[in-house]
Length: 94
Image (cartoon, rainbow, N blue to C red; front, side, top):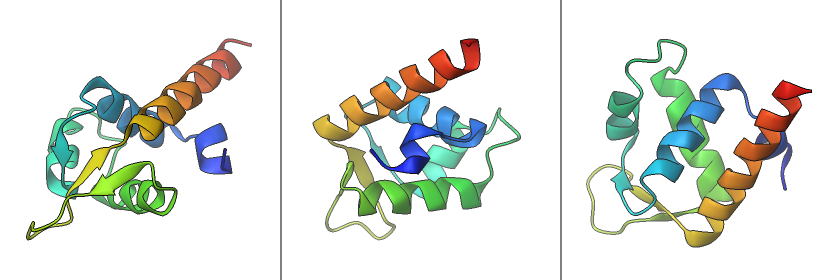
């Protein structure tokens, strides 16, 4: 598991939680940013960087034939992000 998954920032934790809560949904940077709008600490650049990271790790699939970059969480991605969130929570509690 890569370091960003092992020690996610608070913004990444929120992004991961949102993705895991709706694993079958198709996301763009805009739709994910909009879903996280209540969290002022999550900027659009953080969302873009996280999507690019998850693409590079193959934890999300690129949805073809879309104007904007659109991704969907893979089953492997869902498991990896769930583990990352559990580890982050355990580190936070200890």
